[in-house]
Image (cartoon, rainbow, N blue to C red):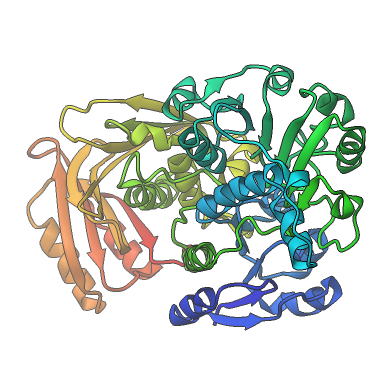
Length: 531
């Protein structure tokens, strides 16, 4: 049975859904690293939040690990590069806590500029005072957003509703997205810092963003500006922020995330002009339910060898752009598996022709799927969507991608061409409803669903061939499920694909090949485990 170790505190829906799908789930929140290393060898999946650093030691000990799940947007506690090298998929939840994180940003901003925390504490102590808690309005203030992704763009939407002027810095998104969210595009971070009354951060923690806002950068902000960080600890230099609060250059700050977590003693906690919360951006009932539900589905899909929706270290399925992406991934994988069994030479060049509007947008994913199928029977290493393209690079196999928006016959079609020191292999396929179909093989037209045990037979187009092959298979108790015949002209060469209930052995193959009119017999197997 497939086993998952859960080392973070999750909504019960996550465990419930995984168990309902047949996974064995063990929940051990806040488990120490040495204990995880002792246990992880028997698990195929590990699911965590921010408390567990899934590092090389854990991955090396996890000899059966296939999937690492993070029930959050960020994956900074996971060594993604090493996971990729190991062929371990990393999945996360990129959007289910967007609303909660954005609303918490605004909540911190309002609490900060209206002195809500301090005023409430004073009142609870038995004192009534108003004059020392004079606040500010958001109306017509200028807010600057670093990172106009899912959370940042939702903050922009809320800020715009408050009547704020919105500017944003994000070098990785299109101009159209700025316009969509009524945000002024600022090309330089320093320019943003000098213009705004309020600065809020919504960018992931990476090598580029770590320490991005240091003392010198923050000093460029307006005197009396407000800073809010609900993104990731470490992006803002906390010592620099404290110093600038002490100097009065930054008037107020709201901080939800810290460089080291958990933390219970920090200079910012005691500063009268800083409102601090213990990483509550996603801590709503609604967000935790959505996050738990989504990460459970991703774990199930990954561990059951299905295409996941939110991978970190593999090409992304853009289902909204092309809703049949998953079906064409399955087709590409099957075509790769067939192509590898038909290729009896060392390929020197491969071409994948992708025909049809929008399907070309999935070229990276289709390439990974094709190579997964192509290599799955030719290496001892585990081959999956994560490492298949790297295996091709290691073997000096180049796959040229050609995008053809329109095809003469099919709305969407994949065609593989393989060249080398032998007869070229060509293979074309499409999807009808959700079913893969092979519609061309080596120049012969056909229509057959690739599955299970298949037999390719090339022969002279002479009478009695179907009877001979059928009779021989019957003698050996091999049942025929379907027969697809293609030929280019009467009396020339014909090509058959025969779906069988059983795999044929060498004896049957040799008896078939011994017929004077049979040119080639190639068993094709698509019934193996799809890792």
